[in-house]
Amino acid sequence: MTQYESRIGTASKEAIFTSNALLSSGSIIAPAVVVATSFMQAAALCIIFSTVTYITVVVCSYVPRKLLYTIRIIIYTLVASLVYVPAAMLVELFMPSYFAALGIYAPLLITNSMITVRTEAKFYRLKRGYMLQLAAFYVIGYDIGLLALGTLREMMADGGLFGLKMLPISVPTVSSLFGGFIVLAILSAGFRWISARLLRREEAA
Image 1 (cartoon, rainbow, N blue to C red):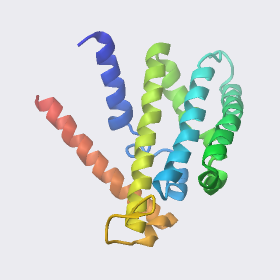
Image 2: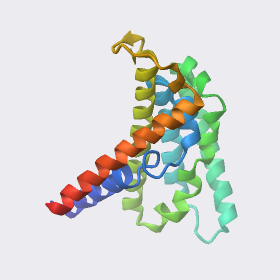
Image 3: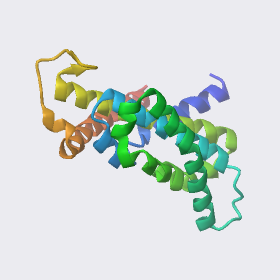
């Protein structure tokens, strides 16, 4: 295995498994539990989140570290706002009903913690090449968790996906805010259990 492959493997394991932004560290929960009640709504949120977060992280990595922290955060938010506009227009064009369902939680992604906190605490302390890879995996990790949450809630609430009945169940409560927290907690617990088992297996090998 080359050094590059090893670095990619380390970045993906950390971002997707060890420190998954939604299922492990519990970041950016509000949009997930409120909006991700189906696969398609989760997908719409993923598109906006991924576009806004990654482009903002990349662009703002060129902001001088000598600037005051407060000024840097203002710049991050301003850049995220500018990126949000075309991203939101794109989702609204192709997924109008799902975009409307996102409500206020779509623009709130402009100030998500991966932009305002993790950039300063982690990303910008790393070499640029590795930072860009790690940031991409963090975004992918959050997207995986969000899509899993939306899929599970839709399956439990409707007994299927995309209007197709697959299971003889119907638990409408999972579409509520309370139900979202419960499903996310169960999903997070399962994810952490699987991650711990994989880690122990790696250490044993």
